[in-house]
Amino acid sequence: MQKACVIGWPIKHSRSPLIHKYWLKQYGLVGDYEKVAVDPKNLESFILDIENFGFQGCNVTIPHKEKVFEIVTVADPLTQSIGAVNTVYFENNTVYGLNTDGYGFISNLKSGVREIKFLDMTCVVIGAGGASRAIIAALLGQGVAHIILINRTIEKAEELANHFGNRVSSAKFSELNNSISKADLLVNTTSLGMTGQPELEINLENLPPHCCVTDIVYAPLETNLLKQARQRGNPTVDGLGMLLHQAAPGFEKWFGIFPKVTKDLRNIIIDDLGK
Ligand code: NAP
Image (tube, rainbow, N blue to C red; front, side):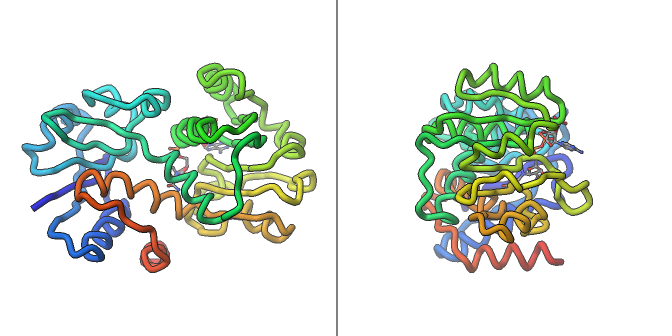
């Protein structure tokens, strides 16, 4: 039986098993997907020996993504530019690492706003953490013209801007409300607005009416940022679809079918978030 898992430390709250078990059932596949808590000190042996632990591969979550990037034998150029891995698969006696967060982000926007065109966009990205790295790489890959990267710790935004080159510039949080006047896409990649975290303080007065607004926080499903944007009439996309779409490439590697993100699956996760 083909098996995969999600690893983290801790791992209790991961919703990945719900997603993959849904697809296994949907496609009538004999397989399983488990949660495995992997202590950082056992991470290297777990990843390099993943097949002997009984798994075709795994998803990787906090705090292991960067370390797993260093451990895997092969990572594609996109994953290398991000420096973090969220999907591992074993093939031809080799351990491969992928980062599918950017794919999940772009697919979510494309399914939320069908007419979206990334080419030549100006984007304002708030946050310069791990998710931001993957999103910036994905947006650049889609041909956006310019990304204004805003972060509380400005040094981190500067570092990412240097890393990704001249289409990315950094700005201070205090410049947020002015920066958005040029935006075709506004993205929150910080944890601000998440249940239990402080709100993202932002004034959308200068936001162009066509600007698409998205938040990668998905609990609550409609963050304050999305609510304000929706009330002004801007197109909005919530963050849950990113979680669902990023899971699809891994499922294909382990179980052989590229699965569909359906409304039904989305509702299952929304129900679980409400528990
Ligand atoms: P991370 O690497 O820890 O980065 C956190 C980011 O949030 C940093 O930019 C940090 O700024 C900022 N931040 C945190 N608290 C702040 C505060 N009080 N004021 C201002 N900025 C603050 O985390 P991550 O992995 O990028 O994840 C970020 C969020 O995205 C989390 O809520 C995570 O659950 C969510 N996420 C969602 C998906 C999805 O599929 N929808 C995927 C990945 C992540 P500093 O640099 O100044 O600390």
